View (tube, rainbow, N blue to C red):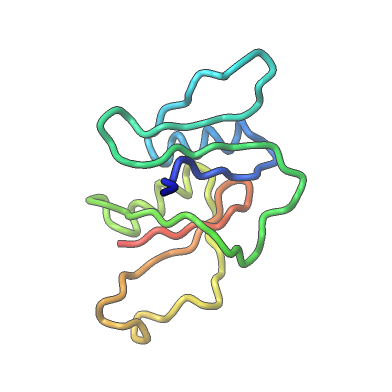
Length: 127
């Protein structure tokens, strides 16, 4: 049976994307595999669960409505505080037409905010 090994993001600027996601998640950059290797792979800190995230050069633009995206949980900081922290790291808010207004959400549904990383890749942050 296959297991989830890594999430790979296509980006225009590996260094910028790697710096953002390392700061956003508190993850650690792996050493490069060889001289000239431009892939950036971030690993969770020892003892923290999660699969690595890799950044690789891509010429294609980020999708406005991607079929796959990253979901982050705000944790103890709270949703708005975490969103503000991510914005200071270089994320931007995305006007998401499918975001339900507070009164339209199911009572069991977590509130979330849609952001884009500095490369334009969409991701959500939930409470």
